[in-house]
Length: 600
Image 1 (cartoon, one colour):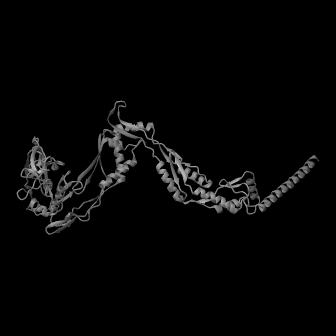
Image 2 (image 1 turned 90 degrees about the vertical axis):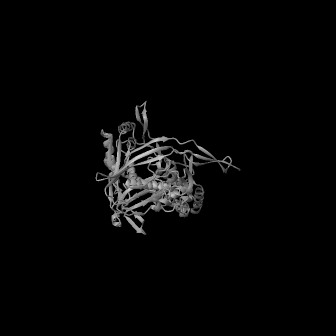
Image 3 (image 1 turned 135 degrees about the vertical axis):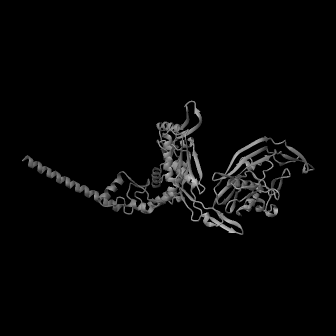
């Protein structure tokens, strides 16, 4: 019976609870609906937008209030700061626009979204208050550009550790290697900065935004540094030679990496710096790669007016070069050898038209090449070098005939385009038309020697000229002065010879080349000697009434005297064709100054 009574009592309690809940629900709903009726056309109390109270306001008044705040906020740029630096981002720069009407409508709808949940939201606003963000839009691309501009001035890359090679052993460390520890860097945390800015946009906050940064630690540890220094010590006294064959002449081009260079490729992770090696490989490719060149040969009026010899195209396989360099570096580091050689992986592309295809005169290949430099020449001298070299460029020498420099160059005077520059005449250095032409005859002399052709006439200069010793030993010069002094050589080959010339006044480089058909001859120069080197006489001053008194003008420059010789021989199939010893007797030369004695 007691159990039945308990159940009956519990049932009454549940009914009372249900009645109570129903009453409370009815009261809440009635209050909710009465409040909605009371605040019809107005926002519920306790609601704010971006911190601004809009509760109990009509839509128009709330819109006006928020509109004023958004306009006030947009009229001032957003401020960013880092240490003692500051940046401004104007609202119009990022196209910031506030959507006041949509925001106020959202605030008005808060608490009106359904009966039950609407009542709860309205109650939350009454009790605790609710702050709603303002709605806005902006150009994210423009914002990103503004932030990137800021980051570019704040970001500091970390400096990785590096190795420094000393010229001598440090007595303290007993090593030539110094490890420079890296330096900390920093990077703007763009994600956090972006969130902070959006928070400012949503809350109308005018407080400057501090630019957040992340530390960037240099790679490597002290252990890595010590191990890398030990590796560097092993490489310091070693070297690597890189080479490849260039062109049909099979001339070898090479580079040498010293121990100091090899140390620069070390990485602090136990290997080699792949990025630096790839960069070096790209640098090699820039100096090696070239397209193939078809031969060009245009013959007109007994002269070649257009000529270009055939040339293979070259291309360095940079990926294979990187792999080969890494292998060579590793072998040098771990091996006992002090030097190693690496043939660079260079692919060749043959031309479609060869020099032999382009003509029927026997102009097939390069036989000889002469090079000289003329650094320090005055403009008129450079001009004359360019004219004289251009006059002999394209000249053909038939088999059995003798080439004459004076005949090929022609008249040397102002009438034919030459300008005044210094020449040697009557024992003096004087200004005259054509100064600098001997640079061309000297360079041709060197090309003829290289080609192994018989020289019929050649005279050395009276004194040593500095231009001709800039890239050569003394004695490899040839002077000309029409009509008596000429430079001549004989074409004793079975085909025509073509003389080509290139004068580069930008780099002060003159190149003379002789093309033809090789008969297998090889030229050699031996036993170069210089003796009886004598100093120049004292400076000579001469009175000149044509110059005002007190004016001194130098008209000649001193040069040391010397006697020079070298032996020249040409062989073919092991047999000497001809041989000769060339002598030069350079007189010492004094500086000459004119001293003015005339009136002012």
